[in-house]
Amino acid sequence: MPFEPLALTATTIVSAIGRGRAATLHALRGGVSGLRPNDFDGDGHIGRVDGIEQHALPPSLGRFDCRNNRLADMALRTDGFVTALEAAKARYGADRIAVVIGTSTSGVLSSEEAFANRRQDGALPEDFDYDHTHDMFSSARYVRAALGLRGPALVISTACASSAKTFIDARHLMAAGLCDAAVVGGVDTLCRLTLRGFASLELMSPVPCRPCDVARSGISIGEAAGFALVERGDGPLQLLGAGATSDGFHMSAPHPEGAGAIGAMRGALGSAGLRADQIDYVNLHGTGTKANDAMEDAAVTSVFGPDMACSSTKGWTGHTLGACGILGVAIADLALEYGMMPGCLGMAAPDPAFRARVLPQTEYRPVRRVAVNSFGFGGINCTLVLGARA
Image (cartoon, rainbow, N blue to C red; front, side):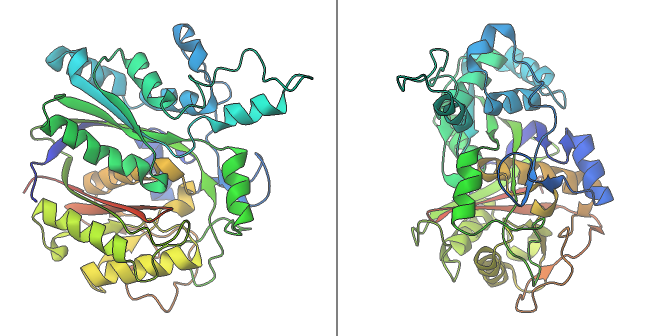
């Protein structure tokens, strides 16, 4: 059903292509990839964020110290987000701002390190604090504490659709009268569980990932964190609609005909009260695997037809898992503001079997509305529609 658009009054993003909106825009315009040879664990290429190891949390929040919360803190302190949040606190009060965070692995790296440093009797190190690092709720607890908020807080963990679905849950909280605004978004960082897990599935590309390319050979894992402050009312960036489905087709493989993806895109258009031809650009989930990209091409063509401009931006950042939804929102924000549709970086030749108009290079023209796709393991699908209020 149609819903009242929400304003994204502040956004922030950190990924392998840079810290902040300006750095992200610079990389997109310049075709500069953040992928590098895997210097974290294993083979292939990764999208690693520089500076996490040196970033320190506030002393009062030291018990939260882990890679995931460090990256979340970097994003909070970028793009003037804290300043915007303080203004929102003055308007609504700290009790009336919710925190809804998406992540897939949270601080699992902390447990990996703790197990690697077990004592001789097998016990974990005494200073290992599971609740404030690895635990899935750790990121929401950290963001709420770092921002001085006291409203509702929850974590969404629906694989790679996690941070996209935070927008939907935040809207429900606001509609229920439990809050007046919300900090939404997500964070996911590199860990051995993810890198080795995808390697065991034979999904890791030996070269930087090339979504939609005829010779694509898999994914490159990345890390990212980003947040948005959502409020009622008007703003230059609006969440116009959202759709989510769960097709439950397979634990790790997408539905071959894209049934759930089609449902999410149509649901997003329906809630926004928009026709398919009123969308200017689709930011694809586009992981770079044979199955995912083929499924999404079929789904996008089914909903939008063969002339819709679309692309995946994972050739810049890698697949950031639970953070890819908020990263897609940040890129949509830049596309709308600067009139640009990023091409598929690294795509030498598009798959000739594809029917959608996949962009090989960045195009510059006015963009009014963008659909952002985020699809996850287990058949989780989410599409967000962003733009300016008509």
